Length: 229
Image (cartoon, rainbow, N blue to C red; front, side):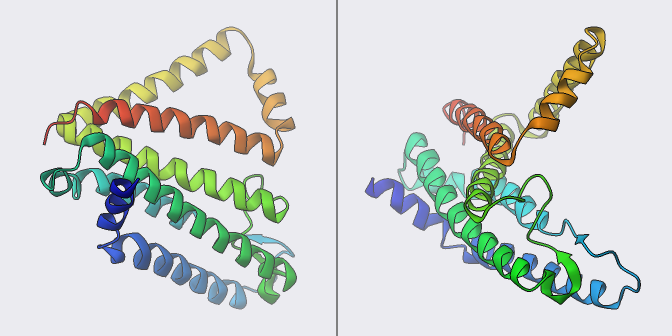
């Protein structure tokens, strides 16, 4: 366990990447949204920004960089691939928990102030982060973890097979999605898909995201064992 903690601390040497930039850019985007919505005339009662996804994109990028920029030196220090991966996952869990708490707190303030006095919903995202505070906390945690692990997987693919591997990995996912689209069209099952997502609650969506977390985590771990540095 001490080794995993040391790996997490190793990443946090670069506080700019893991702490300053994600928080700073998210709050900067929030400030920009406040200014924009304060000067918009005849705005609807409820405005949804979508700017919060900046944080989720940053988690994806941080995940990829943790397996590209930081991996060679980490392994050079004598850390095993398994310990490096699991220690990074420990960091993922910690950062996701902190950021999820922040989202839940700001969302509560947002609701209490009527959308910052402007009807602005920045920390509330329809269908995704749109439930009680505890569901917002849980869903944000799971989604942030998913984005980081997915980024880690891409970073490991890059370490294993360079740009060609990344392109093939992305292409394979596109082909899977196209195959699913063809299958649904061929079996005339789009109405069932619509019914499924139409009845899916926020808690159910969190469960779906949790399954994807397990897939991304397992895929990344399997790739990590084949990475050459």
